[in-house]
Length: 204
Image (cartoon, rainbow, N blue to C red; front, side):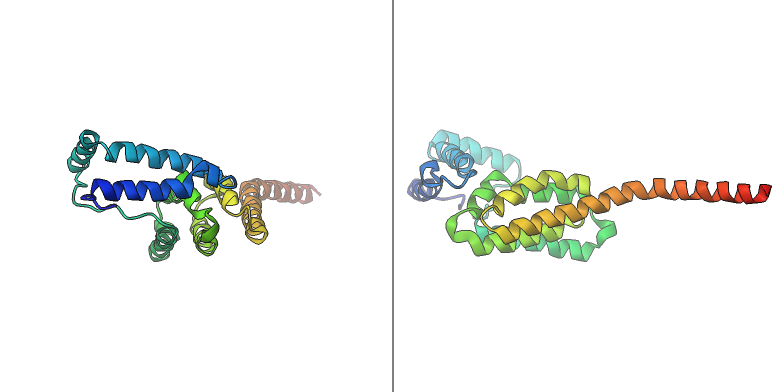
């Protein structure tokens, strides 16, 4: 929403979003209630002149006064996920900040964003978004992927093919992780066995 939006524009936007994400209209969307609360809290601030003035002052103090907040939509989320992948492709695996990547994926998979993506008319964007997120996740170690599994499966809950693809992705990464943990001990064991055999042959 624009920083200079009028009270009437704010009210109109609130009504549109509240209607779309009201819990009574979203029985199958487990994230709609959380998003509806956020929408209501934002309206309570922006609809009261004193509270809105305090909000504007805080944005000004943080240097954000002239920055327009983008309208978050399913298309916007797809573009952000794809932009993240372009950055990762450009940076290369050895120059990626894993902590920053993890934080970016947590942001993309927030409750508010899941509520948007689980809308009945968002199926095409939901599939594009999930594929982009899965691609970005390849750069993270397995133990950092685990908090991302549940929200991804929530997104794919109505699509059996996508759900299975996500499960297979995590299963493949789990096996690779276990092998990486096991391989050094296996190499040590083989080395010890070879040393023992060499010692035994030397004694003959």
